[in-house]
Amino acid sequence: MGAISIDADMQRDVQSSNDHRLNDALQAKRARSDTDTNAVGLSKLPELVNSIDLRTIASLLITAAETYPDIVPFFQREVGRIAAAERAKVLNFEYLSKSAWKTLNVTYDHLRSSHAYEMAGEAAESIGECFETIRTRCLKTASFKTKESALETLRKFGKSICLSNGVVGHEIRKDYYAGG
Image (cartoon, rainbow, N blue to C red; front, side):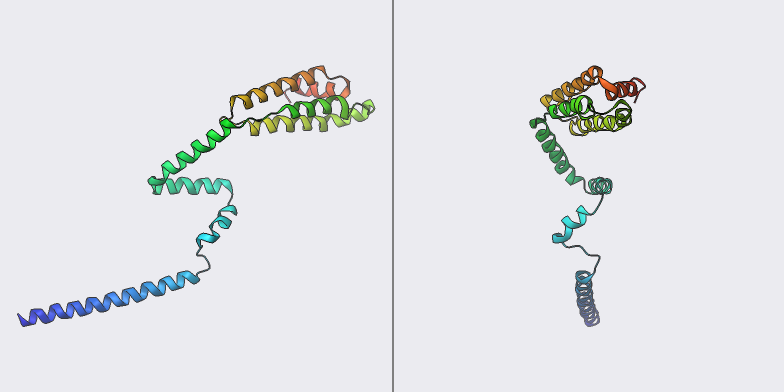
């Protein structure tokens, strides 16, 4: 019996010694990781995230959600909150139709025909930017009033293009008739 208790005592001493060595090793590892230049503290996390492009962030979020399914409801709540905020917001695109009308009927109206012909591309680009603004700002989740404003503005664009006089209007109509 005495030999067994010595062995048990020796095992406890060895285990205790191993525990201390493991604990010391972990503390040393923690100390090294605190000085590691690749380690990112929580205070630096926003700066790090802001330096990453949106596609990479989306990929990281998807990977995180697959790895930790408990965070999926958080994402769903946030998407719902953003959609609700979009539905509550009303955007008015009227200023864009006025800009397009001015581009077609005022900005290049004083130019000679040959010069106005050369400027038609610039005018078409300006009107194209108006279209693009509506496309990017009127999301699927936008409010009914925002969508209504977008459609009304697009209708006004069409009317302004069809009714515009002069070389610029004519060239833009030709461009749109050709599928431009």
